[in-house]
Image (cartoon, rainbow, N blue to C red):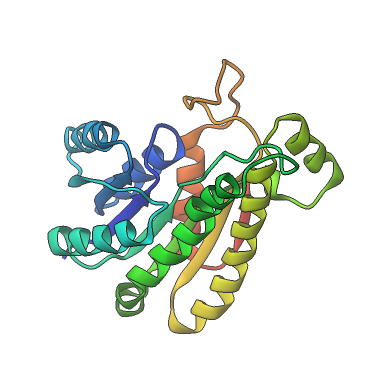
Length: 227
């Protein structure tokens, strides 16, 4: 039976490259994002490359949507072997003035959504000795220069959420490793080519990030990697 990967927060860039890489390695691919057209187009493009892929529109800030979507994926594609979490929220740019609801929305996607998804697929991951692969951003690092960028770019909410996600990866790695489940993170520290952030200054090749995820999935040793 083919293995299945959920790509949560699908879009151009890293998540698309991960879908292509794991699909090329024989995985069935479940594309999940709020934009129904985006996941439909993505699934069609993967199918044209000979990859079994299906689109599952869902709001990854809502735990009930996540749980229901996981059940749909399992019913259609079988047990989940890998969860790739690429979803994030970018609101609450200024922590001194952002509404609390806006700050909560950032964490609902980046952190609460991730944990909800992990819990939803955990029985499958235990049975399949699967993996959780998390995309993160360098704004979450604890460093004065990085903090200065978070303030300058009006990305304070994203910075804090990235830090929480980074901590969660380490905790989950230690908690689940004895059960044969790998949890790892790749943190990007620049602009990814082909994304909305790329204004001609992108330096990070999404295929290279996907290759790193694949390498770490196979070796199952490195908790954190930085590109």
